[in-house]
Length: 227
Image 1 (cartoon, rainbow, N blue to C red):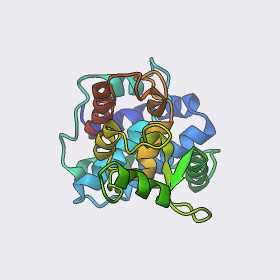
Image 2 (image 1 turned 30 degrees about the horizontal axis):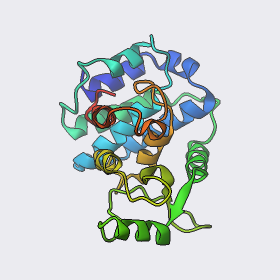
Image 3 (image 1 turned 30 degrees about the vertical axis):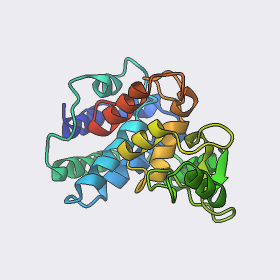
């Protein structure tokens, strides 16, 4: 099943999706779908990133929901169609979902998610810069998740660093590269700091408990289309 077929399946089950997601979850799904629909078709990385967002927004579906089963299927591979097909499928699906829905403003939901992520333990730039230099990395690498904060300045989620004074955790940098954290820091942070049904908890809380390759595999599967 390619991404275009997944979008068609979402359209087929749109009513049960609406019933299965609460208002916040459904609004986030619509916002992610809208981002895909507005993506430039020739920008393959942006399309892949937007598809990842749509899939992540559908994770709260019940385990036995047809769309969830499609997401979890080993047959769900990466984009086998042209980016145009995925973007066109998203645009078509948005039209089918255009009936009035009692959901919150998607922009407000995005702000709420960002506020939640900003509230997580984080380090400021001087501390991160010192840790990276003491670890022999020099300047903070672009793979580190950096969240903008107009009140406190850029913040780096603390889970990315080892111990009370250590440098970046290597597997975190590996996963962040896969999640394109340099261009989509909010999406990468949301992956690490939200529940993940395939891993059995928040990935950030499972660092050191699960094998590194399991975390890398889960992130790779999400980006390539399996999860």
